[in-house]
Length: 329
Ligand code: GLU
Image 1 (cartoon, protein in one colour):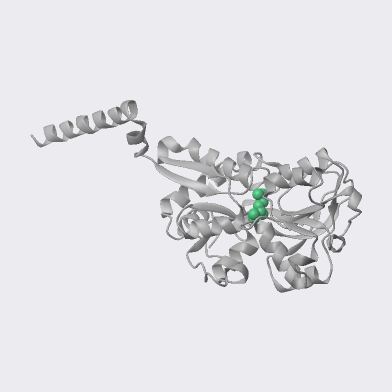
Image 2 (tube, rainbow, N blue to C red):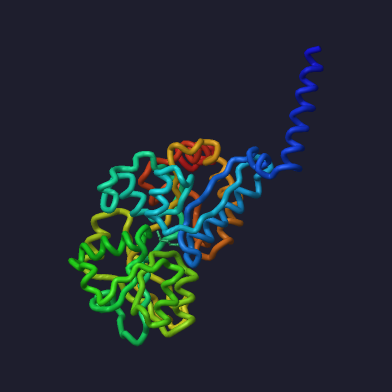
């Protein structure tokens, strides 16, 4: 009798699943868990990298039932705030933004420390990249005083970094003839339409937006250096000297000296361990594939990714996987 009831139950639940899949897509989707990754503008590197991670997660969907989707957003600061608010499960954020959010510093002082922020791994380096119209003759960031400069949309990592640098330099927005706040997807066209003289973008290379700006009109990468930069590098572990390789972009045969941060991947302590474990496994079990999905990822090395550039604690789901691989104690 008992066995019969069990069989009946099995038949019923199989029928229910079959009905769900054939009759109602809404009912079918209730069988899955959805996760979203916040990235940046579509002409940056975060967006394709988030897409690459989701593709790897979704390959194993039949086994784990997690469906990953990628969202274009305003960038690092937006992502960290959306994770805090529970609107996004995962996000790509600059290492300086991760540090400041977790510790409640700089732009996060008012909102307080985001103590539930958790790190997964670090990604590619992101030099502060300043592109100017060639005819402006700007070759150094100091040449941009009194120019029309896109300082980055609110919510972006470049805006946060630019404000930090300007504060050190004693500059204010009124030192520019125009301080525009266009999102990355709009900045290259604004430059080539002569609506701005320069834009600032903290981004991995090669980036679509920089390719667009340098191939559509005569434009040059501008050096970012000086006392304020030296002081920032000295003071904070997440800033480092960087160089944008010569010959990567049309009209820019020489390397450009600047400084930068790293891109990192984060989540919240409230995201279940299993979801995080599935995501990090998908990335590191298919690592060659992952590295090949974008040229900015080509030089990544797993053990460096899990040990450097992270200031929030590791999420337990990531910790479990890294321990299994012997990458951490
Ligand atoms: N670093 C930028 C930010 O934090 C985004 C760069 C990208 O989209 O690749 O907003």
